[in-house]
Image (cartoon, rainbow, N blue to C red; front, side):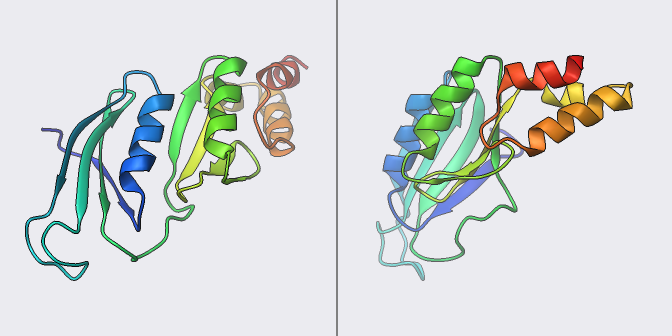
Length: 157
């Protein structure tokens, strides 16, 4: 068992959301689905659905237990993408029915915040040459969905 596992509380549609995420990301699968066998503030025995799942090799736990706090920007799931095709595919799928935002952020139709980013962006923005790093940061701040080629052009000057 992992020492740290990200947990997500869904008001509803947890199984649909988890199956959607697993279908999009490689090395992902549902590990266990169950219900809480005790009465809780969320309802009678069996009303709280629990799912252990893996996204890109990382363990997660999700539960559907009714209304609590909505997801917000205080936590997001970041996917580091090696190609523009990967960014485009994930951006389109996760953004459908959700809301897209600046700098590679989006909120999916279930309310979960995601960052779909090029793998090399941190390296470019941390470059010792502050002029190059600034150009990349300025280009990034103008983007909604990331454009790897445009970021590379900014990096190169």
